[in-house]
View 1 (cartoon, rainbow, N blue to C red):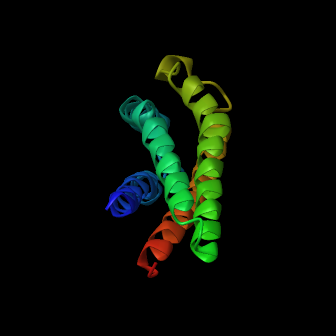
View 2 (cartoon, helix red, strand yellow):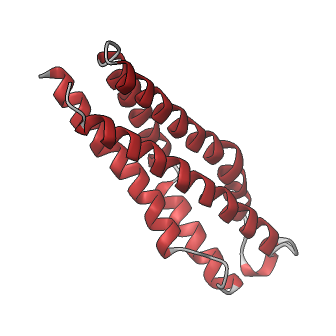
Length: 151
């Protein structure tokens, strides 16, 4: 029963994390926004997600590693869950060292003090976001796939 609860929780958490990241990718592409709209939108989403998403990501990684440990006798499931963990960790590292430093800069902006390189930073942030969207999605797919396989 414990294994099933952890597997269910793992799928749920991975879906929440990957779904949030995917939703940003689908609905918040900033590339064609005016400076004013970009600043307002980006600062709003940073305030809303900057604290909770790393916590959800860490919980998801821990659950994925726990799932791998519980399935360590099933070689393929064990390996796939470790690979899923690696993709989720990579997504977190991209966020920590790519997106969040830019988020910190964006939080200091207003229309009166917009730096000349704001479009460059916006593009860099979006590039990192596209990579973490892919890595989170792959992690989710591997978690779901191993959960579908019979023990």
